[in-house]
Image: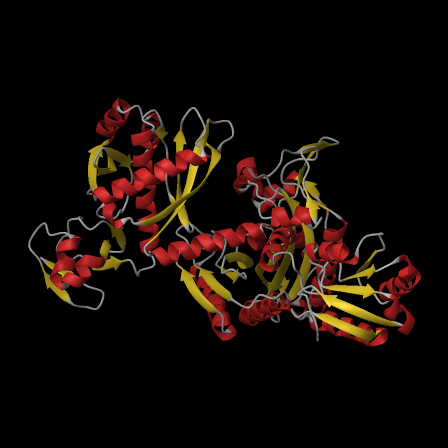
Length: 640
């Protein structure tokens, strides 16, 4: 039979040859590093039987799919180790995730850190045994019988819900698991891994179901990659926005108020106000008008928008007001559309760029809530652009430019784009999708942003661009979204009068630059580890006196700085100056003005920077000039 390679070469193989047979025929070196194959666009394991005419790519550990395959196989390795050590444990699901994997187990008692050490040791033992991993196909009835005999009730539940008549399993020695694969050829290929922690997780994410024990881990092909990742994890712990948010008194949550609902404390409030003021100023400068819309709307509004049909599970129960059902808003777009429809629009009015810092509420399960990064109430950095077809590309280019301007102002330089194209199920005719997708592609190309195409990854109502930013320790965060929408203009019968006097349907773009203020704030805290640039720091300057003699002079400086618009605090406590400096540094305040007798008598200031540098005997007016320059330039530096 003939097998076709990506480079156009054709290899002749015997009937029933496998992917690994092809790899060996190409070269022994390739066969040694092969971990899987791609046959006619589908990932398979190395022992998959080939057929005449198959198009095959050999997957090695250098390919983008390799880490996912490794981590999925490591999840099975961990489950096998758990079953050896805790035979009473029932296995549920164990997928690969970003940077690692997890597996959920039903076991009566929680796993302890000591248990993780034992499991990891057993995993290494199984790796050393180099057990073959092979795929097996059974009928549904056979698979149910097999897993029932093993007492694996969760697997039986999954199998019974499958529509297919056959079930794919993977066997490795004394362990068998329900899985589509592919997997590595043997456990010996899994060398560098680490179990990280245990968490509770409801079966299928439903809090009405049983609580399971979820073990998280990570796996890499090289020891140095594993070590680098573990070092990044340690650094991430130090930067955890929940920990720093509490220490720096920026925000908090309270059980009495409810999970996923954020209370901004005075310092966080100052910082948020600074960011919001900057956001508003930049939007006005870039041709946007600002809107303010209600927090609730009648049910017929959400029926028209489709939210009650397609998004109801993320919305909170309605409230009855005078016999009418009202819903708290999960999105701002229907309100913006109603403002658009408040009068007849002409082609001369377009494009319309309307933005809102609109607070919305969405139901998230308690198990996924995470500080500021996953909440139930949040303020979207939201905007909608309504434009004519010939304005699409220029508008997208402008959004991308604006987005980069905003991110760079906050100290993020490493940004990558992802274009998500039309999925199988979608609305809107093909020409609209093609025009919109081409506009996104041309716009991102001209922006100079590195990008990838996610084929079929768009929403049913339009293609989109997602921008992901890398933080100071290399983690990628999905933030900016630029989303076409062919659905809402149709549902709300939006129109404008074109040059020819005819009614035309406008194009609509949903756009969020920062995402939500809560999530953005969380990323910002972790990016800077709480040591914010001068221009957004909640407290820019703290004035410290050495003795009570300087109190009046310190107050004069405080009032002068306040009157010039700077965020300043006084520390006049009767404490040693070294203690007060250490406290201010723990609070990550950029500048500390230290006032002793010399500074007071000469009407000067001495400034200690957060990084330990000192600027002594400065003229106060000169120092205010430095602060103004730092504030205006949005620099990441502590001094000009």
